[in-house]
Image (cartoon, rainbow, N blue to C red; front, top):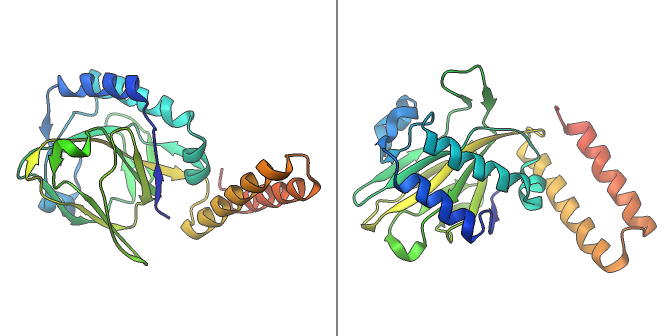
Length: 227
């Protein structure tokens, strides 16, 4: 499932995050790469243990916890502390698959990467190129979102970032371990939840059919969740 989550960061939060990361010291983006990614990747990122990355990452995590669409789509069990990357002219990230297990440096925190997330921090008018291109069963999708918007997609997907030809692209990126491992099951739960909410808006939460369908949702979640 690919899901666009608009407005994860509202304007003041976005400005604060951009201020934090823009003034920080950047390192080679391959600091967190696996062997395959290191051959394909040319960009820069903030050290994950830097003060700027931690403060900006906490802002992102707070915003995610307040996003009903993110909760419904990801059904998150664990979220890897957000990282931040910068693509300048000539930078790119060729086709790759994200590592299945992500381990936070200097700790025993680790997650199974079920979902990948890219939160766009730059206005798309500020750079050319830099599209996130994700391949799935329905084809190839090029994504370039407004600043503050986020794309959620299966971590198992082949994806790449096209070469920057003008300007600079700032993003936050991270991974989610879902309570529901199977992507198809997550999609079913998300579709059911969305449909229930839409009908409830018309008929009211106390409608007997809505109550029954809500029970179906939670019983399926109970069956599939690993938490």
